Image (cartoon, rainbow, N blue to C red; front, side, top):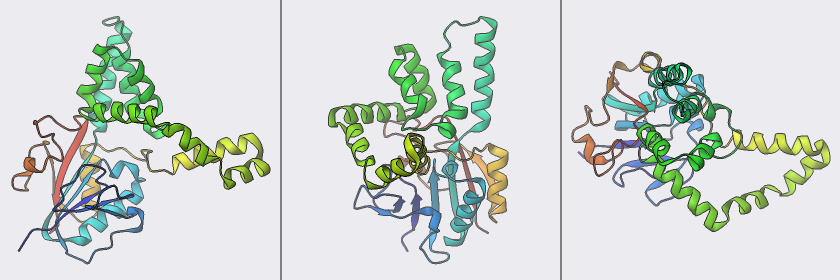
Length: 270
């Protein structure tokens, strides 16, 4: 029987032979679904559930609920593979860069600034890309090389997205759409401050925000709380899933790591 694999919050990284789910569908191979509403599949339906840079966009309690749904739709012996930003790695690198700039070992604060943003920017930003976008725009070639070591090919995607937005006038279009009826009513009722609160609130509910962070202990504990067993940390190319690297989900086709700042864990449904 053909194995059944599920990719949650897939974005533009998916295998057409899998069941791929995202909030919005950008391909005939991707089903649109709000993961906050649970998973619309029967019990024990899948052999693998994969979540890459999805769990951190849920609060801790909502994230646990999603993991329990993953447990429900997996067969006995099925595997869940979870990829999230690695809080432990980020914290260690932040302290390293703090030591460098405070001791005068380096006069270039970009690495320190970037690590600070990795800790806080995506939990506090009020617009697309936050301060990370601004730092990428102004970084030197050496600075961009440091950022690339942190986020891998995601840097190319961010820069490409920025170029396309500028060329197509997407920002202007988005601002025009935002000035619709609801926004005008908000201005009438609450004034200019109400408009700002409305805009910020819409953005913070858009799904871009990070609502929690995980390290190897807290992610392993969450998996156990969701009734998985033997959670273990793995490398991007390491998996209990045969020929994992061939799917090119955690790695690029040329072998580079997709998001080097990540923590990778797998666990099993008993």
